[in-house]
Length: 347
Picture (cartoon, rainbow, N blue to C red):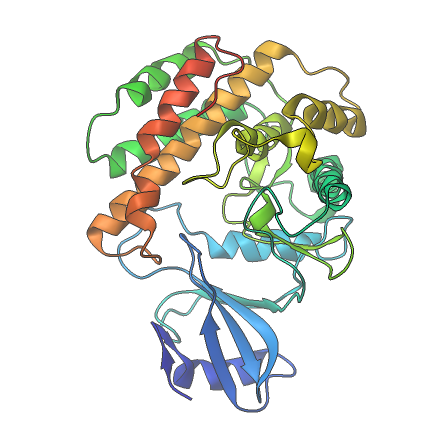
């Protein structure tokens, strides 16, 4: 046993054996690729993949960022629900074990799709994967937070106003240069808040690469990366997810430059319409959708700015963070175009 990157396996092993059934044996760890935010490791016992460890990154962090404790809580609440998650097993808030708090979950063995175009699948299989994502997102938003013990997981109502204020504060804390579109959005979002009050569990980063699919079938077996989850408005979650239709493949792994009919992937309009049918909300107000998209992109730009700042400070968990974060101004510009009424704006 030894250190793997910044994960001290020597210190981890005795803690793991004392808190997680089935952890007896030689422990080894391998860091997953990606993971801009919270470093994540596959843990094997005697050479067999068994668990996943997800921890906070090193360095000075923003007060509400990298909330792995919240990830553990929400996945524990959803472990027996209609929403598939990797079963959480143990939470460690003692930073002395591996340097930062972390939690352990089951290893969900299956397929992970990094490219939204799903290049290895047939058009029919792509359509089935997208329909499954749509179904699971609607299922998540159908859950009553109180019934799974999450009534106080966030403040109910007034979600967009609170989140716009929060991400403005986060952006200011990591600002490295003036982004004109961000300044315009910081004024526009509060002034145009539609006052939507619905409150459900929102994932916050619902996208294909945060999901594990079963081998051989278009069925999600685990939704991952719940760091940004809270109680919020379902439209915010849907808009964050649908951003993929608005950005290109290069640099974003998006769909805006794809031939969707040839690929078998639904259009944004069809995808949103199907979600609305499943959710029973009827037709989504176009003004509300425009606001939700602009907000989602504003928040995404704020996240990218934070990643970029951590890269400059030497605390990001991926070497690609600097490039990834530098695109904050592009996303902010797209958000502002949508806010100004350019309904089909894309990068």
